[in-house]
Image (tube, one colour):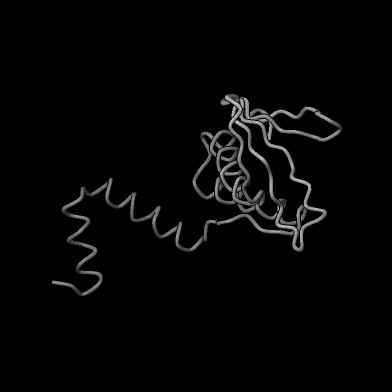
Length: 135
């Protein structure tokens, strides 16, 4: 996830640091827990710390990575890269990120956005209403 995060070793454990904020992410030892949930500890540079499910944090990290690395790519290419990263996360961890983009809905929304920009809001709304059979 370079250049957004770097990795360092602390107390024999791999720890990630978000370069923009200094936020430290470290795995939580869940060996004594009834169910492993993939918890991580997040620690702000001020010292405040809290825990969250790793897949929740990974969702935002993958999105940020795709936004940065996908600069200049088409929306379709960015969605494909997001999907690839989500699949890779699932392969490596055995769990899925919190949310994934659905290709069909995203294509329709992207098209609707282009229509609105090209025609203007009033003309586009009128066309959508006619398409749906609304007055």
